[in-house]
Length: 450
Image (cartoon, rainbow, N blue to C red):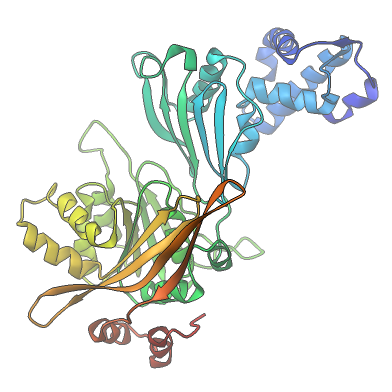
């Protein structure tokens, strides 16, 4: 019915501000509340929009510059969804929504652009109301007793909210809403965006396929999860992939044919928190379960606690493990792993360092640069010499040449460089894991392995 409202009138007799129309319609709908609440979201939306359309038509209400159909959608979104945030939440080219205050909302696009939203909340109270609606959808509460909330809105949307008194009352609320890999970037996208070269991507893909464990490291927002998701998507369909994530699922690796039949072999799992320790299932516990499920590749979404020790144990028992963590460089990643492992066992730092370097021979460091571009800054190998000594050497790197200012914006100029090739010991391991000699020759000589 919402789509036909334009047939009832071409020009509304009573032009009002949107906030006024919203208040009137809300009061009207509240009287119909019992009849519009159903267990079917699509049916519920149809009924609510029908009532909105009828009210606007009966009273010939309108908002200047807004078509009848647009007004119905805006009113419905404001009342039953998440105001002007709704289209951003479901867009495929947006990675992050940052609410700094009720009148300052910044949108981060997949290409790195950070743009102020065209819209803003009506007031600090309006911002709080909309954010509470978002949190309510996942059973989370924001109030004075709990002014900070960290959680998820769906499998692919993470949210951090800070309210009063942690933020100024006049600001309303501060929130960061992260939408993980909305576009499911492909190999060509990483190359076109300048994140990596084809050679680097092919190298990482075939190394993971043939059993070399690796860790993707970098700061928040650097693109770790997006890159890891793509690497996992390159695993052959007949290999079993087991993913472990904390609190909410971000990966969606299941492939189906045109008839809806699953064609690959993937198990997705998430942790379950409980105050009852017997009922609590963390990443470490899921990793134990994973190793009984005959996986070819195990993905630990992020190492940030004691699961780091279990992850390195899994990697050292012959499983290919891929994970992420937060660190400032490839070298610093191993020391970060050592720190995390000590949360499980009080072993000597040198012992733990030897364990994690054996477990994860490859580290790739990703970074979001000043121009908002994301780069694989370095890929390193930790070579273990016959006497047990560790030697870390760079395989690939992005070399920054200079920063230019173009049209008032910073542009980072640089080039990807191939520095070294894999050590003979890792080449031997790849051959033992079934890599064809011809493919090994390609990745060691820098040829196209795709």
